[in-house]
Structure formats: C-alpha cells, structure tokens
Image 1 (cartoon, helix red, strand yellow):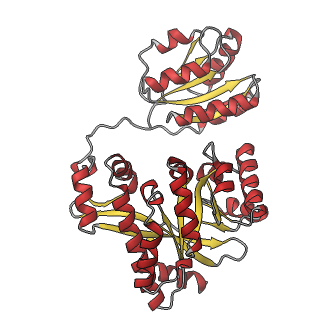
Image 2: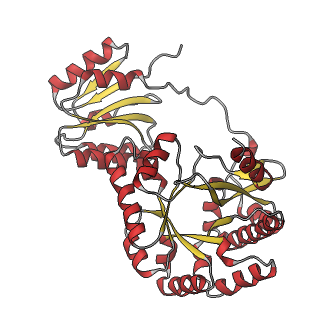
Image 3: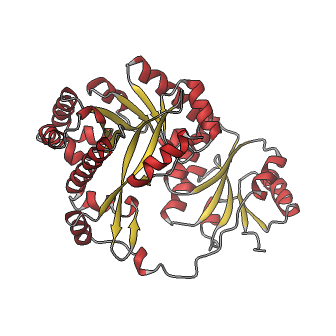
Length: 393
C-alpha cells in the first residue's frame, strides 16, 4: 500500500492550523503547517503533495500563492478554504484550475472536520512516473501533419446526439483523428494546436468537411438519414469563398445543406468580424445550420447571438460537467437553455456523463445531448450497428 503524500496547511491563524493538523494526524497523514506564504513557497516541496490553502492571509494572499505555484509548475493537490465571500472562493477555484492545478475541494470556514477528513480519505495516490514516453507519444511535426492531411491519413469518428425529450438519434458530431501509419490513432489534442500555429488549420478543416460530406452521401445511399455537425476554423469562417465551396461540394454529392451544422467558436467570429458575418449570413441563406460552440465561456457570447444568424447554442462542457455539484454552473446552464429558446434556437449540451445529468437537462428543457453517457465517438461503420442495437432494446 502506498504511503500518503505530505499534507501542508498554509494559514496565518495558528489555532485553526493546529486544529486541522490534529485532525489530519489522527487520520494517518504526515502533516506540516506554515503560517507565512513566502516561507512555504521557499520549501522544496515533494512530488504530489497536498496543500490546504487559506485565501485570506496578510502579506501574500492565497490568490498570489496560486499564481506562484503555477509559475513554478509545482505538482500538488489543492484544498481551498476561506471565511470570505463564497463567490470569491468559487472564483479562486476556477483560477487554480485554469492554471492546471488540481483542486480537490473548496471549504468555507468554519470547516466541518468530518467533511475535511472525508476529503482526505478520498485522495487517490499517484505514483511518480519512472519511465520516458515511448517514441510514438512524442510530439508530431508540422511537416508530418501536412503530409498526413494531403495523404488522407485523417479519419472521422462520430459522436451521437440524442433528442432529450424522446431519446431519438438526430445527429452526430464529426471528430477528427489521425490514423498514423506507425503511431496508430493520434487524438486532436496532439495536433490541432500545431495546425493552428503552423497555418494548417484551414487545410485540415477543409479535409474534415470533404470527409463528412462523403460520409453523409454513403449514409444517405444506405437509407441512413442523419445530420452531421462539423467544427469550422477561423481561417474557414473568414474565407469569403466558403459558402460557394460548400454548396459546390454538397451539390456534387447530391446532399442537402440542411444535413450539416457548422460549429463555430465565438473567438473565430470575433477575429475578423465583418468577414465572419458576411460568411455566416450567406451560409445560412444557402441552407446550412450554424452552431455557436462552447457558449458561455467568452466575453462576447451575447454579442455573437445578437449579431450572427446562429440556429443552435452548444453549452460549454465546463458547465455541463459541474452542474450537479456546482450551483453557479447549474444557473448558467439554465440561463443558456432559457436564452436559446427565447431566441428560437436549439440548445445542445455536450459532455453529458451520467443519467443524473441527463435527467436534470430534461427537467430544464434542454433539446439535445451528447457525451460518453450516451456513446463515445465511433467510426462510421459502427454507428448504424450502435443505432440498431439501441433501438432493438
């Protein structure tokens, strides 16, 4: 059985620190305390330690501590606590997570010791890595990616989208993968950022659109009538030729434009607003549906809804994943659904991971859901079998 990692408590209140140290020691932890943030940050911290951090401290507050921890890339687990405004505590957790710091819990003072011990008991011990990543996990290069696009090594996986009111399969989202000849399947988090950096994202997106249209034609020929959502890049959405190119492509394959929803992030629209609105309006006039992706995370979300002819809101997964345990996330999901419906738009929730989240979305009146609770992304050949098996039960 692995030994517990070291637990540190950083709080300027000596009596409160002593109370938590006593509780942690009784629970079998090796616990240490610091009352000065600068002294704590000067320590040579062990791998994967746990820090209980009070936000409201003199000289250097908890927010500043989080910033320094992120700058030093210290690998630890964080428990936040504060007697301050609960909104500040909640926001501090979002800040830490934005810095890729794993926050186990946020506790309001006075802390219920039973809850504190329960959090400690639930911590899973992670062993330090002792090996180097194999060659197949090393970063790919821009030249490799460009070659892969031109040689049609990219493949599409499809994640089902169900109508929440009756569970009917109404569409899929096309998700790109790279079928590398020696490394196997490479996921988009390993090459999308590279494509954006090296100005390959437009070429990549064009290939994805072509593959999706070709697949739609195959499904139509097999009597499988289903809509496909496609993620569109900023390079594409500011290309004034895009509407005509898509119409030429769908006409060539005798596919109606209304079988496709183009998912656009608001940052893509804001890049060159005039060109974006020109393209988006002409896409709608030619029959394509438009979805604003990751809705709720950008500063200009409401502006996008006002200016652009979107037909669908896709609620950002960050809020959907947390809605059951985070009341503020629940409020945001509720408002997104209400807002979408008041504007005559369909509302889609992504990253639906459980029956409980599905049930709550149904209660709130959300229209469509996708996520691993329903099905993981799958290849085209498996989708019809998945549908048939699901409908037979």
